[in-house]
Length: 180
Image (cartoon, rainbow, N blue to C red; front, top):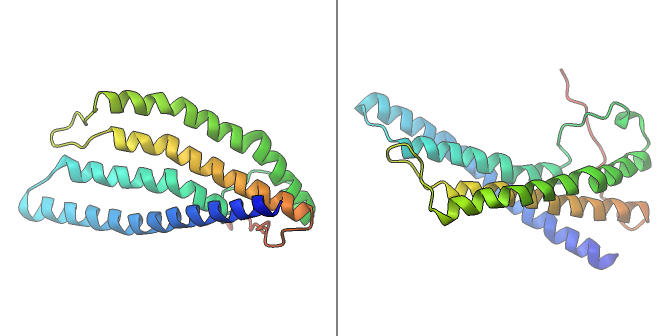
C-alpha cells in the first residue's frame, strides 16, 4: 500500500502542476482577449487565429483543469445524502463512485475521442476560418484531459482506500455545499 500511496503522491503533484498551468492560462486568455479587442477596435485589424487561440486556451483550462479540481475535491456533487454521512460513509461513497462511474467513464471517453484526434492529426486538419489554427493539437486535449481525470481518480481511490485501512489521514472528504 505504501508504494501505491507514493504513486498517488506523484499523480497529485503532476495534476497540481497541470492546475498551475491552467491558472496562468486563465490570465493569458484574458490578456489575449483584451489585446484582440483593443487592436480590433483601435486599428480595425483582426485575426481569426487570436480568437481561436482564446477558444483553445479555454478548452485546455476546462479539460486539463478538471483533474486538478478533482484533486482539490471541488467538483459539484449531486448526492443528496452525502453531507449527512459520516466521514467513513463519505469515503465509501467516493470509493464506489470512483470505481463504478468516474474511472470507467473517463477511460471510455478517452478511448472514444482518440480516433477523433487521430483522424485530425493524420490529415493535419486546419481551421476552415481564414488564418485559423491547426485543429489536431486541441483535439488531443480531449483524450489527454480524460486520462488526467482518470489518473487523478486512481489517486483519490488509493488515498481513500488507504484512509479506510488507517494508513492515510489527509483525505479531503470535507465538502461545502455551494451557497445559493
